Image (cartoon, rainbow, N blue to C red):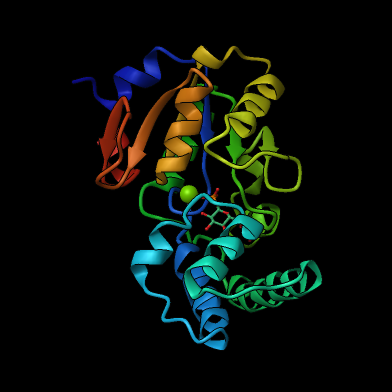
Length: 215
Ligand code: B16
Ligand code: MG
């Protein structure tokens, strides 16, 4: 099995997913979705939350409505998604510079120093705000997020756009992802992928955190 540094040696650019890879915003998504689910009379647990990782806001809402057996008009859905997002933002706005997952800062510095171009490939529409709040915005040469993609992961669009903006071929890119939908998207894009966390299928390498990359 290859290690992370070997994989990096074969590539020309790195694409990071955001939530679950660089920052721990999944816990904020969980709290906000749980609050909405409670209004719908649905018990939302970590098990359902796991299935929303990497999934866009509106697709996440559709899943919750489905689990709750609830129906909603388009305008009700819009209202629910906006309310969930405002609760989520209340938590994001409290984030501090350096509030990133272990190993993130060291790896970003190392990649910059080695001259690797760095892109973000995230489903989140709040990605720029999160990058600003945590103080890592300036590391990114390219940002492709939920504001510019039309197709959710596992569609490869987000990563193909990132590679194209980095002016690299897909096979020259390495993706860091924590969600199965994201790993599938990276593979569909023809990229190498390092999975963060356990239970991910189809990765080139799986590690438990970014701390393992340089160690
Ligand atoms: P927003 P990622 C994803 O981020 C999250 O994993 C997912 O839970 C969330 O629903 C999605 O972003 C959309 O986020 O509501 O902020 O637009 O993992 O692709 O960085
Ligand atoms: Mg993620």
